[in-house]
Length: 540
Image (cartoon, rainbow, N blue to C red; front, side, top):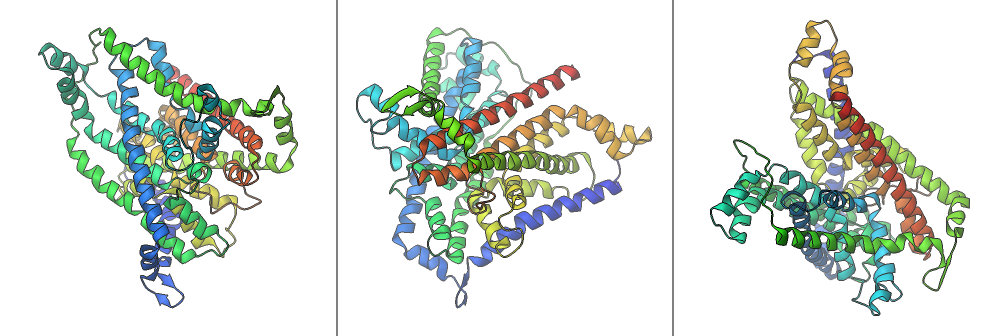
């Protein structure tokens, strides 16, 4: 590893300043404002929350529905990952499971609610198939379905990745020793994954607890803490101090989550040797998990089918005549076209600058001897636990009376900080696997540190960079919680516009915009995957 270079000393403080100004300072202002009242500083905002029965009920509702979501999501994600790694299901079918379960990530969460309405409502697609209403969709049931769809892809990715490091040799040995199905599953699968399963539960809980998009569409009168915060901040008389106190309370589950994850981390262990073996043939097992996984995937897709049908008919479900009129109306609307352009601008800038910041932060942490570089890991942990809605509110409080208020700059910076953790960890893991002596070799050959990075390090991590770009772009296109307090009429993006259109019951426009987001994200995802594959083949 090279000595500390002037370039490192320049990049390091720049990155620290970015997070000091756009992470630490906003959260500090949020915390201070939560104690501010018209009579000075006190805990009266918190006492007001504790005495407000509606708020207490909404917090309880959030905990209840988020806990149920986390349990269901973790179980479903485990079943899907088990089907892929521990069965001998037909290979292409496994690929369908892996790809299909990630499709909801390409849509804004607020769209999930409208898809649920058009699927399970009185005139819904699924309701008509069964000939009756299956259940009440507004409230707990609708939120539970929406949250499970929303959190399942993220939980699956986490568990699926850990399954790659399960040594299947122990599964076979357990069977040969006569262990029953349950005993074998607990000892060879559950125990090695215990920490990951806990992480999936925590991730699902926090995502559900802090999401605003799904409650905004199907929450009904079942109030949750995210909608209460929205009403306090954007109601007839906004109360910034009271909203700040609610936002601080929303951070409490995240704090508990950190302690829980640290506790569960002790259950993780690694194998001294790793062997990837073909499992024993078991048709009963394969058929069972294949059917269950197919049902999970088809159930999820069935909810979104209506979204791709409604915009192509005159008036769903009363007039099913095929038409392109709804798409034509959207593309002829200057307002809606500008909103889509705004989303593309925000997503593109977020992907470019977010990837650059996350990559440089990982580079400094892994490939340099600079002092204090572990601060990057601390920043990563903070951004991973702060809900987007809380971060967005903290930006509003900090920049409310500045020229930055309502600008694309603030929206992009908030999105970069909010989604920093995953791209940073992607880059960190990739850079850590490279030969640690490359920079030293380049220095001996007379190359500068920047030149070595450009000619050696960056090309060897190009596939990861494309993955980071894809992650940032897609999340910037679909996010609503993080930017709901920051957008204005001029900087409105598709996700926030969908919420506005909801109040006018313009569901055709909502679905057309959702389809635009879906195919835009799908195009970017396939393009980045293509570049990744090309880079991998080039390296081989």
